[in-house]
Length: 103
Image 1 (tube, rainbow, N blue to C red):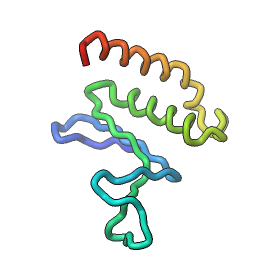
Image 2 (image 1 turned 135 degrees about the vertical axis):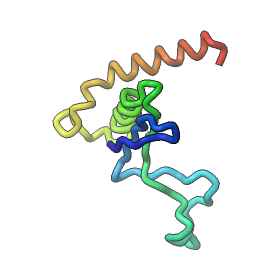
Image 3 (image 1 turned 30 degrees about the vertical axis):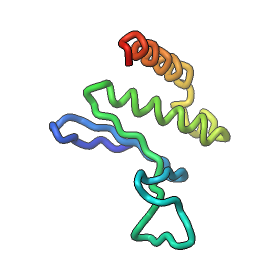
């Protein structure tokens, strides 16, 4: 986890996975022609500003990532997995609030 300052001087939280990658928007998928200078993938990461309870939001994303992409990881390696149920409840609540707000 890394804590940076955003453009307004507030905290911004970023967490990345050392194993997983994700496509870079606007770049072609990896092919034999791809070069190191034109990378089409980057490490998986989640970034949240602090204003919207960013620390908790980014940790929830991390717990979901571990659960979905690294199912072999257990709670002894990643104690944060103990909070999976709570993270799922927060996600469900956010979705209900968005639906109620017409989003």
